Structure formats: C-alpha cells, structure tokens
Image (cartoon, rainbow, N blue to C red; front, top):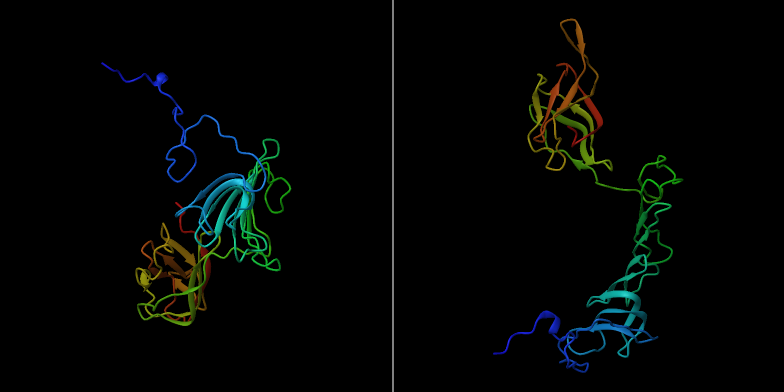
Length: 281
C-alpha cells in the first residue's frame, strides 16, 4: 500500500521545473532575484503573447521593452489606454504613455516617528503652466509651523489659490400658505458640511405660528436638518404680543419643510441669511 507523503516530504518546488514559455503553468520557488539594467524585471502581458500595447503590469527599473512599450521604475499597472499607476518609494503616481501630463497626479507620503506623518494629494498639472489642486494632511506633530493649524492639532492644509467648493446654489421650490419669493430663495451645502440659506424679500402670506411656508421635501435629502432648528430672521415689522416684542424666525424641520414663527401680520418682507448645522444632537 502506498501512503501519501507527509507535508515535509513533498518536493517544493517540484523536482521538474518547466522552461519559461506560454505553457509553463506554475512556477514555485523560495527565492527569486531579479537584477540588471534595461529590460530586466518581472513583466506581465495580456491578452496573448508579449507584444506592442499589451504590457499590463511590471516590476522593474524603468525603460522600454523590446516591443516598444515604455515602463516606469517601480511596481506598475497599465490599462488598455496606456494610463498607468506606479508605486515607487513613497510616491503613488498616475500618468499616461501617450498624451503624458507635464506633472502627473500623485500621492506623496512623508512618514516620520521623530517629526510626525504627512500625506499630500495633488492633481499635478497637465500643462506646466496650469495650477494644481492639492490637499496636505498632517498629524499633530507634523503640523507644527503650518500656517492656520493650531499648535498640537492635526490638520488639512489647502493652498489659498485652491478653494474647496462643496456645492453650488440651488433654488427653493414654490412656497405655500400664500407666501411668495419677491427676491430670491436659495440653499447650498457649505464647506463645513452645514446648510447655507439665502432668502431675500420673502413676502408673507398666512403668518400664524407654525404655518408651513415650504412643504416637506422642499429641502431634499442631504440638505435636511437632523433636529428642528429655529433661526431668527429679519422683518420690517415687529410682532407685539401681550405687551412683549416677538422676533420673527423660520424653523427648519427634519422632513425638509420650513415653518414661520413670530411674523407680524402686517410685515411685507422677511429676509434670512444663515448657516445651519445638519448633524448636531
């Protein structure tokens, strides 16, 4: 009777090693050393045998293969359009074999136990005269001396000529309860993640407290508050109630509707410009 060998008796790598070629199958080895200049390294071609335009991955010192495919130093993958992603040292870089940008997009890491870690993400420039977009992330040690970041705090630095734009202005839909827009009524997400509203010259209709002046869903999902928020607004009439003065306000509801409070019946106008948190508790 023949028994299967124990794991320590199995030949690994196999005793018979096939020569390189399309039918080689599996190569197994304990150590692979690749060295040299020019066309030396590990190269993957697909589909079909090695040829022009089908180099899809490589690990090398950079150059051009015998089929005219350029390759970068490091570990690289390449798609069918010649766009490539290269990892080399502390750089992760995107480029293109044709229509090559002057300065490619990249991610650059600068790790240090002594000085802290930082990470930069930049678009680079397609043409060197372009202006790049960039973000640099700092831990609380690496941020020391970075303008605008408080001492001892982590932070994200954005160049002054690279504004963060989260959203554009959107027009509010039609109003309810006899209210109309005499000027403009718009909303947007601010860079802080808060809701920004710009309501100019709203003409009141029914002004009873709790009147819905914009129906549910007027502020869509993503712009709705997590808790109801009442925000003081400007009117050119003050309501007097029982000898007391009452300020006008609009209340933003969790369903995207807006209600009015404290609006004097004779008031011909209401304005509100505000930044409102969406996710507070």
